[in-house]
Image (cartoon, rainbow, N blue to C red; front, side):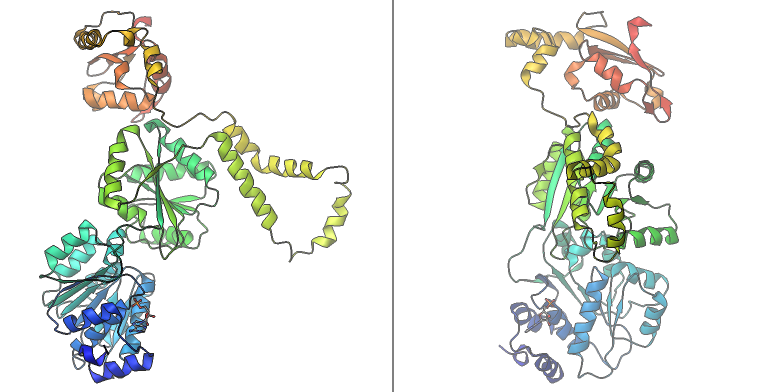
Length: 558
Ligand code: AMP
């Protein structure tokens, strides 16, 4: 098969010859004849490197009218790099087509220059979604006459949160005659977009369709809700070379955690909706240049962020929407690099992990939250590695070292290392010396038997009866329970169920330690297994709820 045989004009065949393309690649062979009709929609499942740019670029050049100096074809792609790459290839294909113009518009570059380029009269626009919307809003580009829309790397665009923008573009191209969508994977969201905006698309698959990004390793840690922050800190400390994005569900969380971690000496800043464009650019600039190690953001604020080399994406909390998980994790493992997406979850969220596993189609790994000692070891080795790799070839160290060598004459190498370590790690070691275990562990059955005395050894029928007894019992001063007073009630916005959830989350206890609960407007009384009550008081008494100090104590001791 030749390019000529696919139905391409002589000028385009001349260009492919000049580029040294001898035979069309499989996607070109299958797509070009279909696309040259100009009215057929296409879904191409193909990755970069398959020749897909030529597969849509050559037909576009043949279809647009070179004598009309307005945008007739629009190629939308996820990143500035891809945008420039597509334009430079199309430039080569149109080498023998004078009067044909193609322009790249993408974020992070002067919009004024791009507006001038557009004004010169172009037939083909290659754009990233964010910048394109910006240009539409400034009325610098008119999509009225667009006949052909190409969505390249559609899955990546959705991963980056551009879904609404893509739909906006598809809805605002009234004269669209053909839509061509290319994607390496086929998640449900792409299927939905294609069903909604395309007419019976021809589907072409080249190579293997990879269902999920195999470069991303998915991990999770289980902890109690009130240990979330501490767990996050420990994960960061356990990964000294981390360059990552942390996702929170709320703006307030992003802001608070960022402030707290900054105070504790971490290199982090927050990206959220309250920042001005200038502040946002500053934070993003620092993160991109890696002068900022960590970025904490809400999903909305992180929309469209495209930064290379991110090692970790951390879900401070799992998102409600499963698709959002894929958007978040897609920030790492890009351009052939590997990455880790890890989530801090509560034991009740395991089901959610299983659901996401089914969507992403790769198994998730449960990891132990590292113990304080492991964190110290990791930091220590990292520091020693840095010490060994320090570049000493440039400084004039020979002049100074002999002068101090005398001072070190009686000190062994081990001692020098210890001293260096002490200077670097004193704070660290102290902090982690008695660090608690943050993992939520499945308690063995014996443990439960213990806390319930001899009850579990009863016959099954007796046990069932006992449970029924517990439900129906009044506050009774029963020896098994301690009645606790707490200064929270319905006026704090709690219902019985949410209150239960709250105290169990806070104290990391199970539902079966609870007896009766009596909630009033201002205060509540809870029966808690006598052995577990001190743990609950320790976890809750003195903590804050919506800025108010919580008081919890033995109701009978007041
Ligand atoms: P793409 O998948 O569009 O990123 O293309 C991958 C690379 O293959 C690019 O460098 C193209 O120049 C090159 N290429 C595309 N089509 C052909 C072809 N038919 N023969 C040889 N090289 C090609």
